Length: 283
Image (cartoon, rainbow, N blue to C red; front, side, top):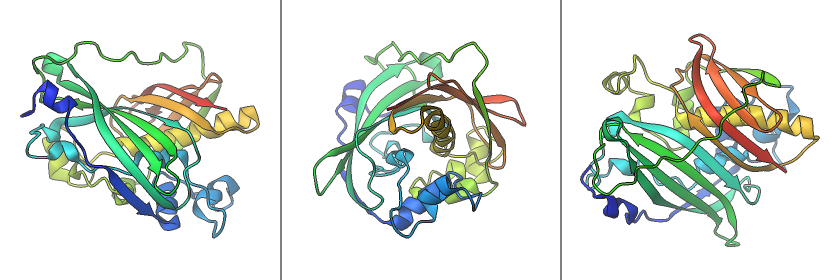
């Protein structure tokens, strides 16, 4: 890492204005697995309507995306060993199915974990260009495994939500597809970790892994449908989760959720925890 702690906190990322269409909205929904049942009217509202198309809340994480900015030469981060550790969001207004949004990303904090690397906390606001209203705020934590030992950096990581010890109220199976990472990257995240076998092996994986934000979208949608059904409706207010392990395209997920909005997910084939400390609020 070439930048100091103070320089990272003050690093200026340009505002990203993104004009998107109904096609982009449908592509996002398809990329996180919607539409596999052609008779599912809930899914079709996001992928099959010509009119009154609905954008998924989770689409906030790909809109106004500043690109793989940690790869910039002046930053000097070890991006091969970088992992997406946590993701969260707040939704203030429904995302329009098409339009123009402005995304502004900033570094909020950097925590030094020594040999484990750095934790970099960032925030993105999404604003509708035409009206100026705040649509969503997203939060991310990236683990820079090769960049520990930064003088002046914080020492206290954020505390994650603890899921209940009781049995989950709902268990939902989710199938990922073998080509899903190649489809999901069309949303704008072209990190070769998800498409290039050589890059994946250099990062310590036997093959390309699914984008953490793809898993985020799939699991969030599954939990949202359960909470909505139990409450008789409602819209997303906030959610946060920890990305605890990689998912390989083609694996099966088992989502476990509780009525208080807590959730987690495992890969069935490996019995590996991949999403933990999840908490969703609807109203």
